[in-house]
Each structure stands twice: as C-alpha cells, then as structure tokens.
Length: 145
Image 1 (cartoon, rainbow, N blue to C red):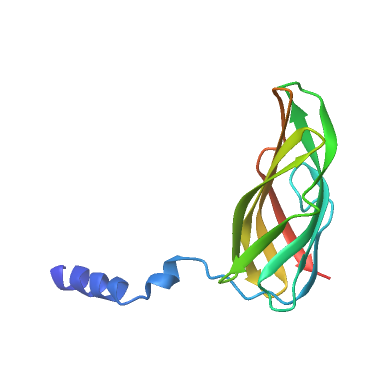
Image 2: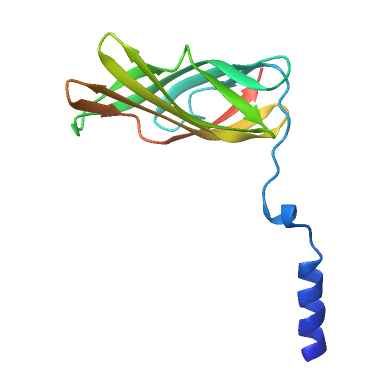
C-alpha cells in the first residue's frame, strides 16, 4: 500500500506545473464577436485584435447597467476608444477615462482559449455627481468572424 502511494505521489510530481493551469493561445488578428446570448446581461460585444496579436482595441459592448442601486437597468456602450495589451494570450486591465464630467472605469480580463476564441469578463463603472452606475462583472465568449 505504501509503495502504491509513493508511486502515485511521484506520478503527480512529474506532471508539468502548466498542466494544472489552463493554457492561453496566441490570437489571430481580426474582429472577435460575442453575439446576444454569449454576453451575460448583454446584447453583444465586439473587439479587434491587431496584426501582431498584441493589442485589443475597438471594444464595443452593449450591456445592461444598474444605477444608484435601483432595480431598473439601461443599455450602455462600453469602451470604444480603449486599448488593452495581450501577453501570452491573456489580457487584463482597468482603464479610466473622463467624458463630459463622467468618470468611467472599464475592466476587461480574459484569455484566448484558441487563436479564434476568447473568454473573459467585462465591467464598466460610471460615476457622475456622486452617483454610480455599474454593469458588474459580465462573462463573455467571443469568436473571430
């Protein structure tokens, strides 16, 4: 019995550390789209990956947001002028912008599970005159068209 436990422990120890962590892929350049049904609490999401697969830009997401804790929601467009870096097939960042007295924080995090598929979460918080609107973290799956 002890020999069996030792053999099992050695077998597990010999596995590469990366086997436990989901690998990310290098994305193909082009437009990635998450249609309705592939964006939690949203209608659609698109973004572009540059030729080198190193940057995401042109992010447009039409999603629901909740303002000042009210149960009513409205549709908002998220992040069309922002850019995120892609490193090792992963992207992550919280970017700040100010427009007409409104401060926006847009968070995009995820990874490319294949050269043509990305999964992640998007979130936007907008603050104006002390009132906050929030999309909360919304999961998405986008595919290259």
